[in-house]
View 1 (cartoon, rainbow, N blue to C red):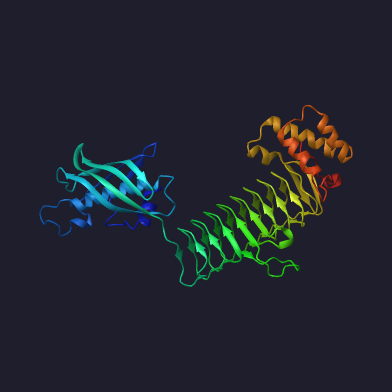
View 2: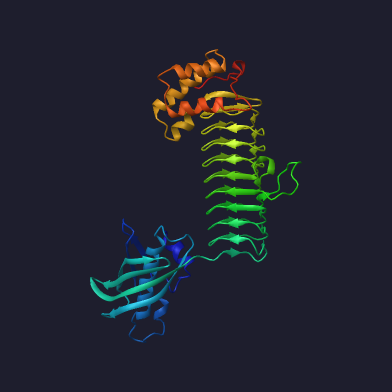
Length: 414
């Protein structure tokens, strides 16, 4: 954690910011820091006139600040937590500290149990110890920060470290995890659960009733995973009884401005939705897929893993995994080679997928015969090829296998 950001959050500002530099050890159990003591420091004004000494209580404060940095760097400490000094054990003051000295601090974690941590702290000047003590620290999770103009239902569950902006509305059945940010005038309604670290930007509309004429106000759900980003004016609707009563979104997805996810959709993890990208009801989107700007996916379709849907496309059948699907109506522009390489696919994995797509798209075989040819080719044995074959065979709406129009200069990805 950057020292300035941490100290600002802990309210340890000038003149009580008593660390200049801090460095943690590789194992995360020790930290070293230093503070240059100068005659211009405000705490010297009027203290021991003619003989300025660094007060002992400020030496303890400097050690506490270094200790808090150490504890906050621990993965077990929740983001946004505040660390406070609870006790000082066996403090020994060895010598005076005066302007011109550099106070060198070293803090080591001794024991941690739940919200209590014990550290051994030492400060020295030019190698001579000036203070040593055992410190007891209390770790307090950060309370939610709710703007006075926000409307938050009394029964809503708001996690530690959440920030709710001006004019935002949080409904009575909403559960927000830790460190969720809800921007100005965003609305989170319905039986909606939002995972830790998710960001909802201004005017987002999350968990509202589905746009389905069969919906009659039944209690249905929206479940959103961790660390998702919903940019401005994104709309996500909860499920319907006919679709399983639940819309579900995984982790670390990015929904750019005005993207829309309709009722009963299932979105995986690590996907990207461009501005205005739209999913109809009951759509399934696999992990790492990308739906580009202003594209629409018809209800009940599937978008396979690592699929790329080009901008302004209209997808009315299942979009194949690993492929580039583009156009209105959408056609297959070969393998999504660039995307796969960026995700770490090996050359052999790319080669096998490319050959499988040749059977599907350029062999002039019917789809069933192309799948049989893939099954019979011993060179196409990777799990990715098996997933592609299974995806096609399990399709209920059919899959997009149309090639681009050659007259338009649209070619295969070889």
